[in-house]
Amino acid sequence: MRFNYTQPIIEVKNLVKKFGSFTANDHLTFTVSRGEVFGFLGANGAGKTTAIRILCGLSKATSGQVFINGVDANTKPERVKKMIGYMSQQFSLYNDLTVEENIRFFGGIYGLSSKEISQRSEQLFKRLEVIDLKNRLIATIPLGWKQKLAFSIAILHRPAVVFLDEPTGGVDPITRRQFWELIYEAGNEGITVFVTTHYMDEAEYCDRVCILAEGVVQAMGTPESLKKKWQVDSVDDLFIQIASGNRLKNA
Amino acid sequence: MNMITIRDISKSYNELPALKRINLQIDRGELFGVIGPDGAGKTSFFRILATLILPDTGSVEIDGLDGVHDYKKIRKLIGYMPGRFSLYHDLTVKENLLFYASVFAVSLKKNYELIRDIMQPLEPFMQRRAGQLSGGMKQKLALSCALIHRPGLLILDEPTTGVDAVSRSEFWNHLKRLKSYGMTLLVSTPYMDEAARCDRLMLLQEGEVLGVGTPEELLSDYNAAIFTVRAEPWYNLLRAFRQDNRFETVFAFGRSVHISSKDPEWSTSGQIVKAVRTMGFQEVHVEQVAPTIEDCFIRLMTSL
Image 1 (cartoon, one colour):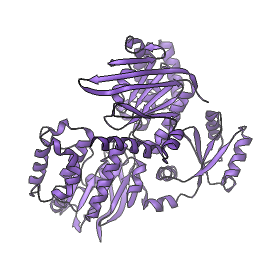
Image 2: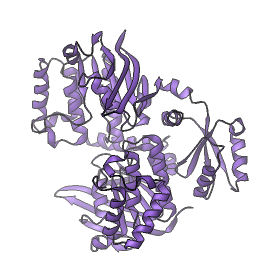
Image 3: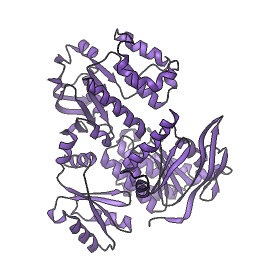
Image 4: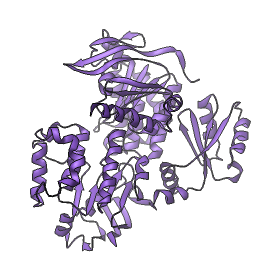
């Protein structure tokens, strides 16, 4: 086992989020363990982004509880923000800063000392084998490298959890697989990875997946156990079955 | 007869090559896929076919018409849906449809049967401004506008990027139906799992053609066995494979590792089990898996 189920890092209990009369998240309950790679799947509009914003301390739940590494995200969002890393498809590296300047900037924001920043950027350059990119502007480096850098910077401060919102869009398959190895490496070092994706094969890469439709958890478990339970060949088939089932119900 | 004949086209931007000497023929009525990551040259390729930009070298012929001299005729013949949403945000759904119909001098009614299925979920929102539609709805409206004049050739640049798996599947069903009307369809996508939906494919990487063929042909060209290997601790297994140069490809795949080798010594599950045991792992599970288009793509990329 790479991770320990007795060490929950994300604990969500009966999370409800309403916007007026619309229920975006309807009693979500799940836990994610230390070092686990957790896939959070759902069709566009299923309520993923709403839930992630609450988990990151950016938005408050209407009711229910969210703990990140034991800290209540509803009452102590500022403490939660320090314990997490975040990367989206529109990753937020600064195009007109160099690679090194970006690392210094984000390291500073997360309160790392100059010494820590220097050490960790050395490690980062070594791990990614990109020392020659150090002084290049972000705008001038290939997309695949930007993604790997954005991820490495999102975990520079050794967060308890890193949230990845569709991180791999548009890159070639080799880069995509290398990116997933960085994800596993982070999981192996004890960082919990919470990831959303439209690539259904990536769902198979996760330790566990949760499929959301209409704000409700419709399925949760390891890809293997879910495929067995729903008698399908792939997570893709399962996803389509669940999401289109909900659509038919509402038609 | 060919719908599209492409002879030796190249395109560069500020000396940065985007397309390198592409030759291709696409049959009438074909559903043809162009698959490649961002920066592969998909958009440049489609914009040349849509007569929006000129290639530096080479020529394009569409339905017997020359891409340069007959561009006006070609534009009447094709429907083009660019990658970025390009309808008018401040016009309503209906106004957008009417506008596109008027540009091509057809009535909305005339070809409505072609887009009825696609438009059906949008019908309650005919008076809504296009800018306020959800992503999936925008995509359906854009497709409808591209079809309004019943084009013989439909060019769709990454219509499914960023769209969830269910909407993607629905979208491909629409394309299949359009094909049944005899339309030629050219579709680009970064999702390799959509490859199987095409009659033929071109795999594109950094402006270069890696391969052209039916999905079956491309898969049958993959001449190495792929194995999925499980053993604990999983991460150590991955590292052990990485350090071993007998394997051609080694990739993490969930809690297992996918490996391939051209070496006949490593071509059966039994041989792999033995090899992994000698690396010091106990309970070893090995299973041969069928290659996917993505595996083919990786193989072709690394052999460039």
